[in-house]
Image (cartoon, rainbow over all chains, first blue to last red; front, side):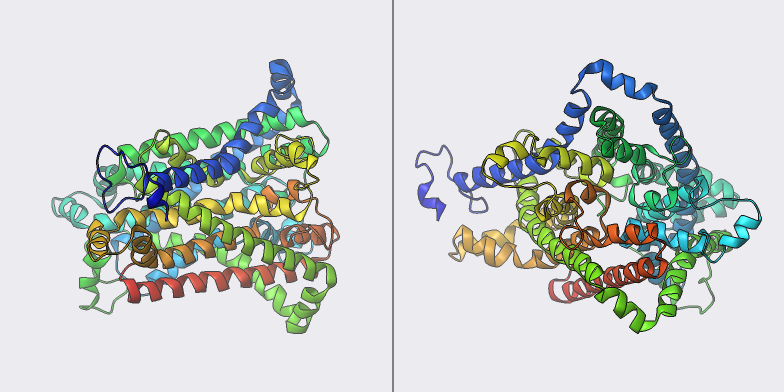
Length: 291
Length: 288
């Protein structure tokens, strides 16, 4: 194959576990070109389009009341959803990793379930529960609460899609760490809660941060599920991604991309911190996961 | 991993196995309650509504021409996208794991971009790139190639969302390959190509299949990154998740429920397939 084409004047002979230089450069070229085309170019497009009409037009986007409302709503939703799912994740990981009981793997599969469900379906199920024709629709309406096409629906759908992030990060980590340290603390007289705070929490803090980080990125950027339950009421039930869609469909390209660049920036920061955690605390987070 | 606790398992039948660690009841209870309320109850309601339609009702939803076309579009393009992701994902994982070159760590970090970038942002970015006046769309238009607002656009978007699933599934295995295997193969006279093809790649097969299944499952359900670039023409470039939303907007709850149930069934089938692949891999290669 390409071995025959390799330059004869190599300083050191090629190791048997390496490809010929030409093959190597070719593969690197293909990988870089593919990642550049599919990942970097779209990312660059977001910022270029956002600044396409100058810095003034870019910043003018953020003076729009609807944009401000969308940013505020996104922050509110994340502020409700992320702590709830973090608390659930820690609790689920404690029950699953520190105890032994039958049906554990089924429980783990069920916790992972939201990852396998289409975002649109995730939104739809809440319409079936709380919508006008839904099971509890008439009930919540009688209570004067609006769930679907209102903020509670957005919160529920976002909880659903970010449900597994913290739990699936902590479960393998805490299983690996076992129960020895907690048992020692308990024998020495610490209360259960104190054991958790002073022994367990320091052990899982980076894993927890990792999970929270990913959950937050998804919570702020979720589109499909939220789109189904939001009702798209400007200034009231539009999160940033929904506002981006509306602006884009109105051919307000600069504003759409300016708002989108906010989310792209969040994604980059998330990736940056995530990478940093993976380098710095590789042993203290569950490591590379599929999601 | 979980073996430290499994020792206890044999000694008792109590639930959970006896332990000095406190807090099982509240944490387990909270987990079940939260899981039940947030995930299981709403999903089972979907299945309940679908069962009211009955099999014949589901069948008539699925065979409605527009629905059938959307399901076909979603299914086949997702399949093609996942296949492309397997090929290039393997190359990317290989290069990132085994070669040293400037920018490697940056590229490694950026592979997760499709996980981190909100789908709507990816959607409008891809649409802008491939639109007839876009960076890539304009030069392609000169050759009469149209990507945006056709099925090709859907394919591009799905390749984007599926890529990290393949790379991140293959990468850890690639990093763990024992160099001695390759050396043995080389000493026994295999060419490098033979070593790669017959020694290195076969144990990666389960990971590639799992990556394919994950990318496929994600692609079938994907909405945000597709709808902006797809054109969304009924019967041609309309994907199944979009049709759920269209049905909902027409207050056709039965139709929406029907499509959603079919998609849920596809998700479960893929989950099952992944578990089977991993069970087979455990038996055949001793790793997952």
